[in-house]
Image (cartoon, rainbow, N blue to C red; front, side, top):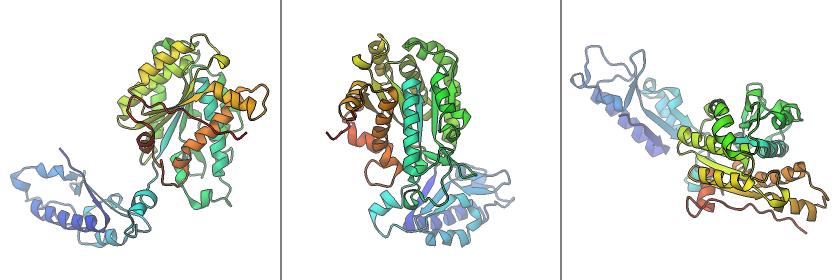
Length: 388
């Protein structure tokens, strides 16, 4: 049963150096990780494997990581007697230290890239996703083809936007996102829209027939056929992450796909990704902007199913957004595009702390800490102050 040692800061690294030197002496392991052929450790006992892993070449490598925000102390390990014992990837350094300042170690220098994967489900989720990624690109200076102009340094050299975008070898910025719908019409708008080059085709997933506003079709019949494909695409995105924080899930409560398929997907994500945070952006049905008579049923069913699997659900009231468009923005007959762009502004405001440097709500768990009083009561209502 293995143990991993993590040595942090000057003290941690220097103590680690002394410890591993002693472990090697105790177990008869040489400074290059080899063990003399005439040496059977502890009379053939291999309990030392709790602390060492053995490579195919018979080298014993410590199960350890050395971390310091500046390189001086770790460089002593890199150049010391036991330099061959460690793999270079185990010795991690930054460029500048925390200057004995807790806040620098915790919030600024120490804050690594912690990625978020966005999952957009159903018509509402996909259309909001379209509006959100358009806005993120404008905010970060990324062009519709994913390139960044060479004269543009995003946010003054800040790379916090990498929580939402991954960069390819060719310098293209690709959203860490998946768009899913059980029928192709709405996702086809993304495939043919202005930002079609931004996404990889594998990120846009569609079935052949929709859930017809029926929770059971989204969750049990049509949804079951596509869920493994969706999880596979999400897994590919997760593999590209160095420190996945969790998932942002966009959907409606009223639609068949938004309610049924989302609840199925969240159940499966809980199995595959255990403790990773899951935040929802959910469109709540409203009588004035209703498209199906069964929306209340779908809402009850999806709320019940996802209650244990969601950490925080930001509720967006379609009717309130509709009223803001009419009253404050003088749009006589608001379209879904108007509603979605306004919701995009709200989502952008909420996620800004994840995409730009800051001290508050810098990761998904902090949202829960600040907004959720009890695990089951996790439904903050999104409000937008629109000046009269």
